[in-house]
Length: 365
Image (cartoon, rainbow, N blue to C red):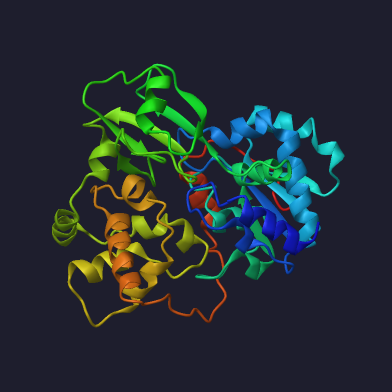
């Protein structure tokens, strides 16, 4: 199979990035890469579908990954997954001998290990420049379900179903293979129904997901629905009012820098500094435009407002709202001339961000 044939296969069978972004998978293909990374980092808490899928369908996933790597001319196929996913690793090791160019990259149990830019750095040591695509450093990244859908397409099956994890306050947390168009309510009922009164529904993960409804339908990018009490911290954070968030920032932001010092993209050398954005936006500073424009480089991981800020402010929400305004105005990301260099204290801060895993394996071997 050549590159054009694989591109046509992906396009005609409706294969898009199943991790959440929905980027057309065929558009990622490039003959100018030497590495293909399979993202099995399962970035968000409570999400399990990628590791479960590779546990059950390891041979199929590895077959498609091998095909993609050979078709684009990549000499290296890397599976990035956390070292604690023992069952997934065992399933891969039971099948990997058939594929000469595939190996496992063990990842620390930190968030957001599944962020594409973070994963590329951990797996290859390369740092994607702000606003650039992974192919710029010779890499393309696909998640597990996307690659499995390529295998299914080889068998003549287009994308008509989606794996969805139902978790949280339900009787039987389960990962379902659901027809696209199934309502979230139907999946919740299949998981035994809610166990709390007046529940709320987080579509996606607790960090980056959004509040949805029972009658919302499964799409190609629906990864999870998490049922939580309506007064849960995560629900309250996601139901906040942007105008109120702004007033709270104006009144309470003390410029402690925690949001910036723990920002994954900042630690990789990208020019995104949430504390600076909070300063200029809360002071209505129209002269210093740099923090406004650099907000485009935010990955939206939510670490700043769900973990870092001890005052409970909302940098990610305000940045996301501002980025939407920039896009609507047709303003693109500023050009960054200098190549990013990871900060010297990055590894220390990554390990301090909740990881108890002592990983002595160099992921670049």
